[in-house]
Each structure stands twice: as C-alpha cells, then as structure tokens.
Image 1 (cartoon, rainbow, N blue to C red):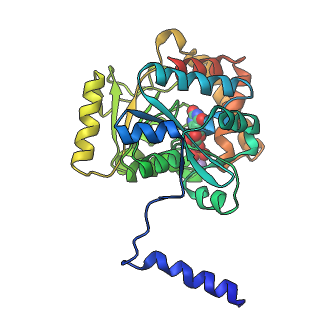
Image 2 (cartoon, rainbow, N blue to C red; image 1 turned 90 degrees about the vertical axis):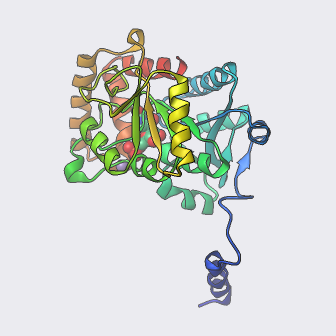
Image 3 (cartoon, rainbow, N blue to C red; image 1 turned 30 degrees about the vertical axis):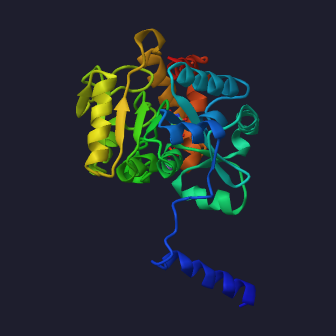
Amino acid sequence: MASSALSRIANLQRHFNPSNPTSKGEGLIKMSPEVSAALTRGKPVVALESTIISHGMPYPQNLGTAKEVEAIVRENGAVPATVAILDGVPCVGLSVEELERLAKMGRKARKTARRDIAYVVATRGNGATTVSATMIFASMVGIPIFVTGGIGGVHRYGESTMDISSDLTELGRTPIAVISAGVKSILDIPRTLEYLETQGVCIAAYKTDEFPAFFTETSGCKAPCRVDSPEDCARLIDSNMNLGINSGILVAIPIPKEYSASGNLIESAIQKALKEAREQNITGSAETPFLLGRVNELTGGASLASSILYQMF
Ligand code: PSU
Ligand code: MN
C-alpha cells in the first residue's frame, strides 16, 4: 500500500485514543455570526431543516417559503438556524446568499440523512439536511428546538420493504425536540407511532388528544401525551434534558382547520401516487420527494398550499 495511504490510516487511530478526545464537530461546523452570538448570549435559537427547500418545493417558492419561515421565527423573538452542508462544510444558520444558492440548486443538492453526512463532507459536496441530519447538527452546537413541517416515518408497506425513515431512529438517540405537523399520510402512521414507541420517543400532541396527519388534524391514532401550552412543552423538554433521557421528543401541532386539505382528496391522490411509485420502481430516499410531488400535482397544488401555509402559521 502507498505510504500516504498507510499514514492516513495510522492517523485515523487518533480518534480512538482516549487521551486525545475528539470533539463533536468542533471547528468543523460553520455557524452564522447571528446564531453563534445568540447561543453565546443564551438567546433562543430554532433549528430548521433544508431538504424541504431542495426537494420539497420548486424554485422560487422554496426560497420564498424558507425566508418567510425564518422571518416568522425572528418576529417571535428567536433566531432561525437553517442547517445545510455547503461545499462540504456543515453550516448552522445560512446567509440570504447561501439560502438562495441552496434553493436554486434544488435537487442537485444531495438529500442528506445521517448516513450521508460523512460522504457529503468528505467529497466537499452540497447537502440539504433531512430531519435526522438536522437534529445531529443542532445537537452538536447546542440547539434543543427544531421546527419542521412533516417528519419521515415508516413507509406504507414498510413491513415488507423495511423502509423506515432514519428520522425515527434519530429521535430515539438524539435529545432534540422536534416540533411538526405530524406525519403525512403518504406514510403508515400507526406503524410510525409503534416504531417511535420502540425507540423511546416521547410524543405529545398540542391541544388535542389525537396525533395529526399533517394535511388534516386527525389521523385516527391517539397521541400518547398531550400538551396545552408552550410552558407545558418547555417543562417536558426540560425534564427530558435534566434526566439525561437522551432520546428526542416529538411535539405535533395540528394544521389549523382553515389550511387543512380535504382528507378524501389527499387520500385518493396518495393511493394513485403510491401505485405509480411501485410501477416505476421508485424506492429508498427517492420515494418521499416523488410521492410529495405527485400528490401535489394530483391535488392541483392543494397539498403544497397546505404545506406552505402550515410552515407560515
Ligand atoms: N416529509 C414531509 N416533507 C418533507 C420530508 C418528509 O412531509 O420534506 C423530508 C424531511 O426532510 C424528512 C425526509 O426528514 O423527507 C425523510 O425522508 P425519508 O422518508 O427518505 O427518510
Ligand atoms: Mn427511506
């Protein structure tokens, strides 16, 4: 073997030397000045994912929505920290130019879940982080709260394909609170809730006893816990952190009635999109973006409108 390869391998061993502890991402993550100042001063910061920008909506709607969501976080007195990997550098907090670059890149950016992070960094690529990857970076820099639209879940037919989003295992191992509109019914919601129970994830629905299904307030599934105020949420997150439970929390806030799409319309579009995905053999990480795109086309834009409105409410 070439000596340069041998010395690289030997150098890797430093990671296992206990007298030389490796820091979690220290010096490897670029924080925006705004996020870094807020964290130093103890000002509230909210993490945001970026797959929804690259793979969730077309340009320029994606840029408009991303900016709007950041503005809403600011109006409420917190600092937004959108997470992405740009030219191999994990970034927490993006400038307007960086946000624009990612929005224009669209699907050319790699959809980056936990499994993809090392590859995108090593190849100096561009990665839009999913819920799992965003949780990892949020936790590395110390942001306990992360807001998104819909999280990944157990896919329909997951019992045979084993397609279970790494968002669920991440919630089981990273103590971040994810605030979302629940799980879209393109997924198998009852199995998603079972899997989250196995992973030890605390799930609380906000001002309701039912777990919401993103497009609609109801899923037919009961939520394990209920919270009725931001203070309730804060107490829950604090208890989890204080006890060092080390798994995450999912707070599900149902979409307001006036923004929700018709359940029947969505369900028939989902059935059609699922059939097409199977016919075209679309599986793995391509499935979620495909289904979301088709459901939006088949509902004449109603599903995307619900998505955008939810992000903004
Ligand atoms: N579900 C949505 N909208 C999304 C996603 C999921 O309703 O944009 C994105 C999120 O980034 C989520 C990821 O973390 O897809 C999950 O993908 P997969 O099912 O391949 O794990
Ligand atoms: Mn998957």
